[in-house]
Length: 289
Ligand SMILES: NC(=O)c1ccc[n+]([C@@H]2O[C@H](COP(=O)([O-])OP(=O)(O)OC[C@H]3O[C@@H](n4cnc5c(N)ncnc54)[C@H](OP(=O)(O)O)[C@@H]3O)[C@@H](O)[C@H]2O)c1
Image 1 (spheres, protein in one colour):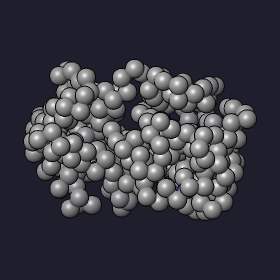
Image 2 (tube, rainbow, N blue to C red):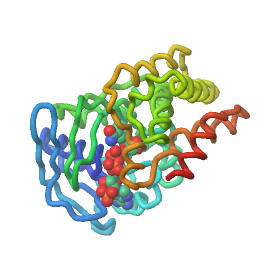
Image 3 (cartoon, rainbow, N blue to C red):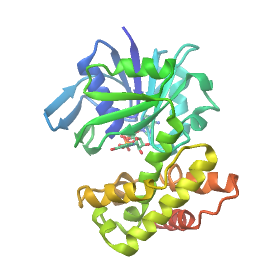
């Protein structure tokens, strides 16, 4: 039996925990900040509930085969307290977070060859403590290597697709291109339909163009057509869709801006690439939040 610990039972961690617990023979332990009796997801096919083992203190943890981190990217330091108890020299750490710095975030604490970065495409929102709504299919992408293949095997029959790619870096930057444009919605607190307005669409395009230039400097293979495809996904998707930093602002929670537009600015600086539009968005959102 494979022992899996999931740190952070929020929208992504909660959904992954329920699906791994229900559909497999794995032993799933949830690592939370406060006690939960069960986890429930409302899916398009109905309700799924599970009662995995829940730990609320890192000292209760024991080494597992896999640790899946699904906290927000700004919560790395408190997460590390769990890793000390949940990991031994064999444990692999999957990072289910947004951005392009999955490995860099945890490399100070875990050998890089045991860190598995994961691009998450799974529309889930938290509707209460331990209660989530999954609005569409879950899709995870990992690198096509030994750890990536083993990670994909964990999810067999869970209803979450995992694909492997020989170019993980480009995949992560494509997701960042999508996310960075969404910062405009978070700033003005208006859902995706604002992308229909030409002046707003032009700002979103400028954010994505800067992302592409910095991503290419980092080694990602990004086509210019990404600008229009990102805009199309906002214009053609549900107009009332609220992205996660927008939702976090509305709820008064910290926002994950540094891992997104902030990363474009920081990595741009490293390559001496100007990113004025992302800089402005980061400054305004940090001030507003
Ligand atoms: N939601 C989506 O649809 C979606 C889609 C794609 C990618 N992502 C990415 O996936 C990552 C997770 O996002 P999310 O939406 O799942 O966030 P979330 O709903 O805010 O969940 C984060 C969870 O981490 C928990 N947490 C924080 N610090 C902790 C600690 N020290 N120990 C244990 N648990 C801790 C939080 O606890 P509390 O419950 O106490 O707050 C919360 O349950 C982010 O990088 C996000 O950008 C999300």
